[in-house]
Image (cartoon, rainbow, N blue to C red; front, side, top):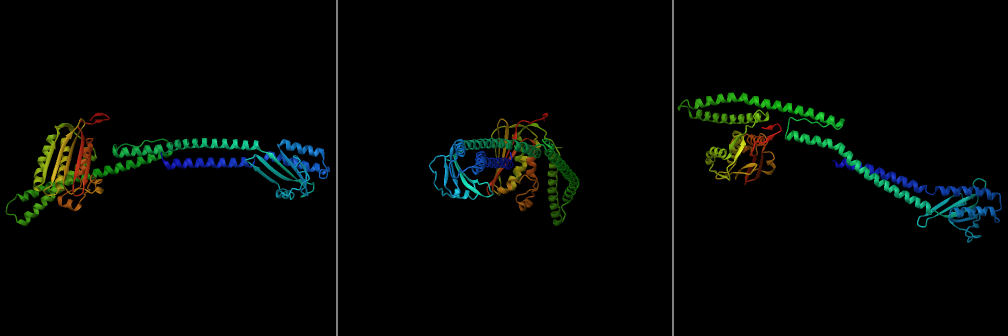
Length: 468
């Protein structure tokens, strides 16, 4: 699952929930007391008209007083009415009657300004508003009420609690939706990535088949076109290498025959001519070796050179290889030590296996110091046999190890020219080991030596269509 995409969906969803919840709670808080305020304001408007028709400001009027008590009891609060001189003419609690109220909010109300405040801890609201005298912008008194808003506060708390619960529930749903949506969008891409990895590592002839939605189908089709083009280019390259190698093989063979014939033509050849012919012969051998390696790789690439399994005594194969390389080792005074822990019989292509192990042993001698050593071991278990080739040579830098199986790659290019290295031996070895369903690993340290470890199945691997 793609973390940035998931986080983006979740962040946008939860942020939207938070904003909507904030707006809803703010609106609820702002309008929680509208009904009571409208009721009181409407009462004060009608009170002003009624006062204009009575002598309420100078003497008690029972009808007005009755309405004031009614509004005080209806809101479970206290009502005070003061005249234009700030003298209290009515107090539902009868404690401020006849007193002067020098309160800034009340003075401001005489100028037409309303005042409203809520004490949430006590659950009490204070509402002060002017009493109109009937003429425009003229006020005959002030209406002051303190009343309980406990029900409004309780309702507002319930709204906030439910809003929070809904926001949390929506956040959980958004997270789940984010996981599902991310999976829906990313899973096809992961499938494409896995199939491409399988195509590159296991089945280069396979094709992508991911069809979750139109966009993914288009990506799959485009990748198939790229793969087809890549296969076409690779096939052209393989054909070119194969054709060129075949074309070069014949003239090289002819030149080799002619060179050998000239060298054997007589002992009266001048020393310079004989030296030149010997060098030409050596270079022809080197070129023939390169061409043979290229042909071997071309056949492996084109799958025309299949593995021909047969029951083989691996110990005998190792003896043949060691007998071939001992003269080369003795020329450099290199000791070759072989340790065989058991008799091993396995289903392998003996000539190919011999070529792969020979390449490792020849390299162990070629890139070793005079007087060094080469250790070859053979061991096995129930399923695999193991061959290791260890030398005491110059070793390979850690940065180079990941490249040594690439074609034409040479660690020490200057020394490779001296020793005639082509950079194809290890590539051929790995192709052969892979064709047998095996693995090859390398461990090396500069100036201390290198160890190649080969693991190959003892029994012929099972293929999809049955036994190969």
